[in-house]
Length: 566
Image 1 (cartoon, rainbow, N blue to C red):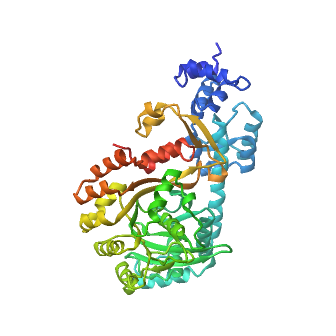
Image 2 (spheres, rainbow, N blue to C red):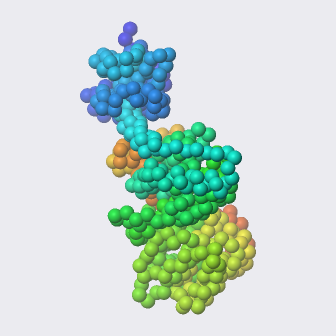
Image 3 (cartoon, rainbow, N blue to C red):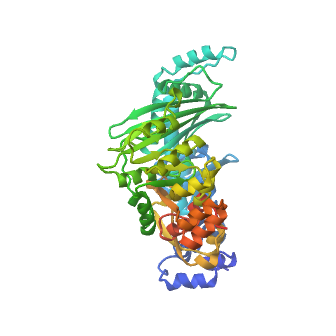
C-alpha cells in the first residue's frame, strides 16, 4: 500500500497532525506536502529526504555528507553539468562513483554521468537546496585549489637536514625569489582583503599547509597547499615584513603595508614555532580612514542615550571591556568622533594605531625604543590635553596614570580585558588601584561583543520552538513562539548565512549607589545585582536575544558570543 509523504513524516515523529493541518490551512496545497512543511520550517531538509527515500525505496544521503564530498569524486563530473542537472559526486566506493541527486529517477542525468566517468554510478537521494549549495561551494573550492597548485607547480624545495639554520635560511631566500612564491603570497593577501578578512592563519599540518581567514569573527578555510611550499611562503613573508629568515626557533613579530587602488592596509605579522614548523598569523588593519559612528555600531536608542550622556561629560573615565576582537577600539574611535571639536584637544596612545582619524593626535607605542604606554602618558600630561584615549590598560603603572588624568579634570577613554561590565571594575582594582580612586573617577563601564549579522540576501524567518531556546539554555516559557531568523546561505555570504557584524552591549552606569559599593569593596555579583535591579542594566545575553528576535542575528550566534545569565 502506497504511503503518503505526510503519513511517513508523522509516523517518524518529524511532524504531528496539527502541523500537517497548518500546512494545509495556509494554502500550501499547490505544493507537495513535504515541500510545504519545509517552507514553513516545520521539518528539516534531511527529514524530508529521509521520508522521500523511504517512500521511493531508494538510499539517501545527508546534507552534511553532501557538503563534505570528496574532491577525488567531484573532479569526475564537470561543474556546468553538475549545476545544470542538480547532481553532486560524493565519493568513490567499491569501484563506483556515488552521486547525490534531487531526482534519482532522472535516467538522462544518470546516463550523462556514466558517459563522463566510464565507471558504474550509484545514485542516492539528496536535498535540492543542499545540492545547489554544495555545487556552488565545492566547485568554487576546487577552482581555488587548482589555481594554487598551478601557481606553485614550478617550485622545488630542497631541505638539507645537516645544514645549520643560517645556511638553510639563505638557501630558502634564494628559493623565494622565484615568482611563483611571490604570486602565491600576493594571492593570499589580495583574496583576504577582497573577502573582508581581519586575519590570515597559515598553519603547517603533518601533510599539508592550511590557510584560514577570519571573516566576521569566525575562521574559515580558504585554501590548502602542499606542505613542501611552507618554507618558501614563510620566508617570503619574513622578507617583506623585515624579519630574520634564518631564525626558525623563536617567535618573531613584524609588519608591512599593502596599498591598493582604494585603501591602505597595515599588516601585523606574528610567527610562532610549532611541532610541524612555523605558524604565521597576519592581522589586517584597514588604514584608509574611520567610517563608523555610534549610530551604526548596533546601539539601540536607550543604549545610545546612556553612552552618549557619559562620553560628553567634562571629566571622568569610560572603560570598554571584552576579549580581543570584540570591537572595543572601534567603539572608542566612534566615541572620539562624537566628541571631536575644534575646542577639544584629543590625544590617543595606542598599540597599534588601528584607524587614522582627522583632528585627533594619535601616538603609536614603540616598546623597543622605550616609548611605552606609561612613558607616552607622562609626556602627554604636559601637552594640555582635554580628552585622552588609552588603547589598553594592561598594568598598574598605566592604570595609575589613567586614574590621575581622570581625577585632574580630563575625560579618559580606555579598554580592559574582562568578561562583563561588573567584573571590569574588580579587574581594575586587581591591578593595584585603591577602590576609592576607582569609584571616584569611573563614569561608565561597558562590556561588548560582536555577533554576525544574518545575510540580508538569504534571510528567512521561523517561529521559535522550545527546543530552540533550550539549546541556548534559556527559559522556553519566556520566548517560545517568538519569530527568529536565519540565513540559508548564498554566494553573497560564502554560504555561511552571515554577512557583517554588529555589537551587543552591557552598560553599567556608575551612579552614587554603585560608587558606594565600590568604595566598600563589594564583589562583582553585588555590583551586578544593583546594576540590573536598581538601574535596569541589560546583560550581554539579554541584549543578544533582543537582536535575535529583531532579526539582526541568530540564536546560535548569541550562544557562541555570550554566556547564560545566572
